[in-house]
Image (cartoon, rainbow, N blue to C red; front, top):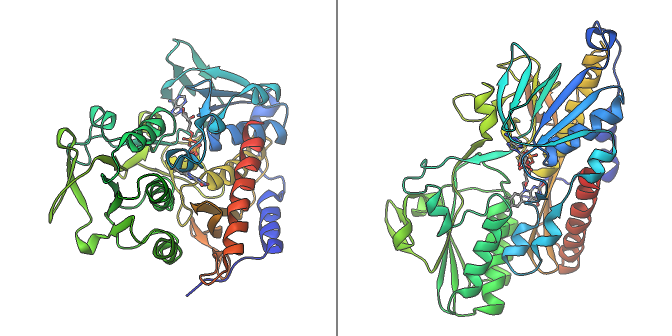
Length: 427
Ligand SMILES: Cc1cc2nc3c(=O)[nH]c(=O)nc-3n(C[C@H](O)[C@H](O)[C@H](O)COP(=O)(O)OP(=O)(O)OC[C@H]3O[C@@H](n4cnc5c(N)ncnc54)[C@H](O)[C@@H]3O)c2cc1C
């Protein structure tokens, strides 16, 4: 059954609620003593948004953004690069405009956090003092969690779950494969970055095979029986790729238990699958600095207060984006951007001695299933008993029985969304 879609008016209303201001309640020690300092680690969708939103909320706040790379390579739309429908150059963004907002941008790796002294150590040898710290490091791969899948294995069986060289490697492997070769993909158990991402990728690889290597086929081995937008994807696969895509769920023996990179083989409880190209989407965790700072728990992810996005483990450290457990909110760039705005507003209010307001947050995830074929899932979330929870009756997915013109329109919306979010965050 199709869940009801949220109207544009409801979207806007909940966005306005997220941005609404509350009443002044708390003392304002930091501002009384001069410019408060906020250090943001990670200049991705969450961190770059937070840095800019903080400066916008209160230009007196001294904001430093620490980012490992001078150029950011976006994951959304990187599946189109793998499928030969887009170039990696369109995924790349710099930080000049962020710096032009009055944000100090430090290209360095944050290597340590001292929560008592409130300092962040950088790999350059220097350290930065903070009143509030924002950690937005995204994900790291859990090397070895899938036996056999270590860092060297990713050179032969790319994950391409961090965009850049890995994306190009997978694309080149597909291009070099002989027509008739089998492509194998493994999808992990929840939670992981971008729940619909493996299925968008499967669709676009199938599209590549159908148009460029028609005797080839993709087999998706999945550690789950259910996934995001499942019926929409499955209907599209039946219609578009009946000969080029086979999905094997958990209960049909799809869970990969180990990998053999030298054999280009994935092992399940029921047998071995050898591929000409193998894409392993491995288990993940919060970016390493979260572990170093003591804000990641035993799950590998970070628990937060859903009003302030402050760590439940270490005070004065806020987190957002893929690194956190966000209740019902998926790990997406849309979520990261929305969480960052709420978190920045909360920090600005805390630093000004004001009480943050209860937020409402929105997420929309577009997936491109093929040329001129897009589908969506949307949700609205609010804190309930300390957990971000679906607002009853909100959100939903694209209609199951929509005409192709509707799918074409959603593909256009997807592109519009990508252009809008990247120009808001980096432009
Ligand atoms: C194939 C694929 C497709 C996707 N498609 C979509 C989509 O269509 N829509 C959508 O909404 N989402 C999509 N996503 C998900 C989206 O990419 C992530 O949810 C989003 O990037 C999360 O933002 P983030 O800021 O938490 O992490 P990131 O964007 O990964 O940013 C983290 C940043 O932190 C930096 N960093 C990490 N540690 C340190 C450190 N110690 N010191 C300095 N810098 C550090 C990194 O260099 C990086 O720039 C997709 C993901 C994938 C893999």
